[in-house]
Image 1 (cartoon, rainbow, N blue to C red):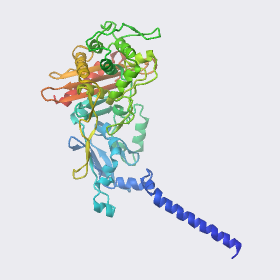
Image 2 (image 1 turned 180 degrees about the vertical axis):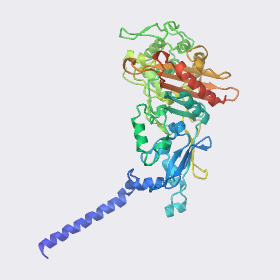
Image 3 (image 1 turned 90 degrees about the horizontal axis):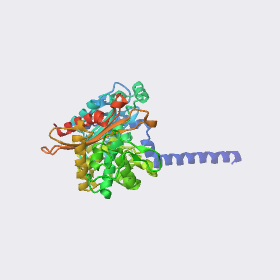
Image 4 (image 1 turned 135 degrees about the vertical axis):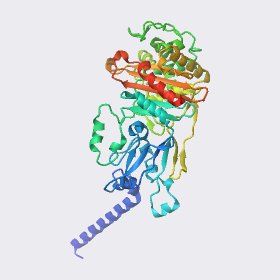
Length: 483
């Protein structure tokens, strides 16, 4: 055989072998990865080939599906009261993907989850009927929070302390997911992305901010659990003002007339005495404060309910002056409204933290359970004695202190206000916080809430937890107690 022909034949054979190896590699090892690739158009076509399953609130769907007029995507997502429930559902968009419950349970909602398939579906490859996601949201609480926040930029969370069920999750300003659910919604999408108020951010779960004086509940819990003080009514060793260790700076209180010198923890919570909690944090040391904060959920990287909440942080490596500032919820301490609601829920539940969850059950199209989430899975955070004492002190805050706007006639209400500095040198409008719990002894209903108002447009002098956040919390608690 001619040498040139022989070389050409060998080269062609090698090319054929290379093609066979590549094809085998694709079919045997990369097929599933290619099938699951986010850029695979077939996945999107399959996802919207039939009406999606629904996200359910109190037995009623807050989502739907609408037949499209053309193209290869047969249906698109619709939302009932989309702005009200956006912080719960997230969005499902033919162009921009899916978030939150829509994203986490996308395969259940579009019928591609293997748990939905019967044996015949597996044989024929037929797409199963979609399933549904049942939430723990109370529509009355959700509506109360949304309407009370109104045009304010902020967020609110409500939890059932005994079960851990999330009763309300609101973030404002909100958005209507229906307006970005199709393939021709680019203008609406760009408008949301360009909005300086960031309506797509779930402030309730995914925007940690300085918690201000609401963090004093954590510091008080650490002081009682450590034995630094035996009760909330024992006088502390707290000069007023408190000189930050190693500096010439004093830690002042908001009100010069407040009885904060050597105040008890009860009085210090009642008047939100910075000098007391700055000194307590230094006396305990940052390690003990951090240990208590972490019991409540701070520094937890993976807090899923089932939407993953951003990490709330209590820092490390601080000097004493910064440790003092951390004791009043400043310096680098950050928390989400969910985390601060968890603190109040723990104290309301006798010192036990029930795992927070927003979904009660995932079902198939016939209502059969695919997955359920048990209520009341708890862990001990503080002793029952500590929880009882701090609840009593929180009641004092509402009845006689800085949280009077949270009172509810006929119910036990305890709370804690907070006003956190914002911006370099506190150059921006402070954050107004309020966290609380309420119990109706006649009905047995309970709720814990946290509210943050980032910006209400009010003058700086008018920004306070009691003035801005407590009335919102009160409306949410009344809705939860059905009063």
